[in-house]
Length: 287
Ligand code: PAF
Image (tube, rainbow, N blue to C red):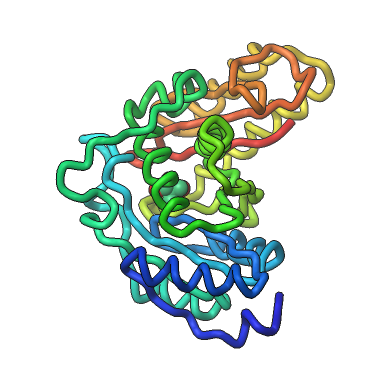
């Protein structure tokens, strides 16, 4: 952590021009600028991205924008948790230099007509169940990066498909930013930290960590040379027995392309999305 960064108070920006001017000053002074895009409802997982940002650069900017275009019509956009004052207090305490809170009009001016489709890698997993979601994510992240012009943008590995989609878009379009992934932060019982965990009631919260236990179990099986399909079938049964109502996918994939694989011969990721009551949980582990 640089002493210079920690002595600077959090500055809030709502508009692009003053934020860009500040970023230009920082860059002119030779400082590396890190952007952490978020939708707010911040928790320790987000703060671990901030901490990583402070290791990688001298200035950290956190954006907070609940992006309407990445929510489907039946998803939780309107009830997505929003608590800006608490978020800003957390960011100030974490030594963040700037918070960027654009309005919907700034992000999507009247007659906004552009959407970024990243083909192939968005077809399966969450993409199969959330049509348009990754186009919404890719579009808003491209906008945020263009607006802020950071050297580095950081994303949690918890949303692993999102991270790989963003990496692909940035590579394909030569967007001048380095993308970094930050490992998932977990509760002591293994549950991945998520803004949506607050939707779980006490009984669901007790069951939720089983999802990580099953991912770990499949990873161990793959490491001993077992095939994916029977491991996945057994874990799916156990998740259902434990109380998960719908398991949208539980898949063993090539970590780069996210294509399904039967054996972990190269970099491999196991990804899951499942409903517990009305809460959709996602998680993933590396093999
Ligand atoms: O992961 C999130 O919080 C969002 O998908 C992101 C990357 C901030 C884009 O809205």
